[in-house]
Length: 419
Image (cartoon, rainbow, N blue to C red; front, side, top):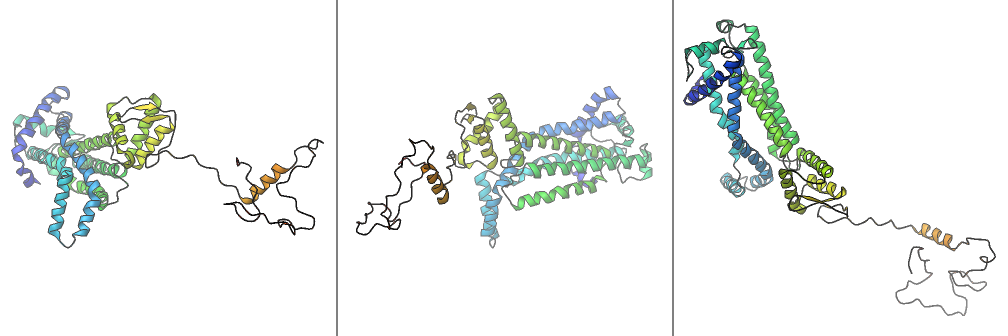
């Protein structure tokens, strides 16, 4: 680790200068030789670096989403040119160029942060060995060696011996307890960050090997950090724990405010947006209007979450407009996948027995009055005595059916029929 850190010694002076500036600020409040002054200086260094890396973080999000969307096409290319690796690479590069995707963009924040991490490690290692480094002179070196965080010196490590820890004015038990707790917190924050990414901010409709790789990294990264953490000084553990917590909070904000389309987080976001729109009858935020405008523009290409959102608006009596606003709608029609309204469900057709029963009830007398006791014309023609029902009498000409009429005895018409 010391060899790797020495490769980034060119950035040691800027990092040490930033730490010293923050130390002068916090030292005036907590005292120059306290662990709070030096610890908060490291935390402030992390925050400053992460603020500068926000543009790279945005690129990382876009690249990750593009990679998820390209996974089916990439898999098809691999299957098509599995025997020609050169052609496979050419087609992959062509796909990246057409879609404007850079696979390395997802690693940019980590790569950009690595020089500062190793520079800080080099600074703390020099403090532990009693050497001046960068702008840290003898007086600042003595102050940093006296600084303790919960009884553990900034430059001490979990693997240090009792003599090395005693030289920094601390006990081995305190150092190992503090470093163990910080390593566990660092690994847990890394695991939770990756876990919430996999469970909430991944398009569940796309099942690709990329998701399996991310799931595997969710368990591998915490183990790597735990193994490497025992060789990190306390100051470096403070740095890495702070950057993990920052990443976790930053990712939580992105998941809640700008989720991946088709993910569980998008469904939760649109449900919150639906409640807000129905409660206030308008869309107040410009960013929310942009979201609704994008959903309206998709039309039939909307995913399940977006269709459910449009359906909820329609049921609540609202209609989304192309500019991202909503207006009240008198007709609450439920949109289907193609965007057309569903037709009203038609009543089921009655069975033959039910139709005959209804016909018999309609022909039954409703009153016993004399006026109503007169015989009513029957639906069937009278048949001569001795003749079988349904057959014409002897010598009577058989009635020919009309054009388009079915032969034989006609079924009585349904009561609900107009004719």
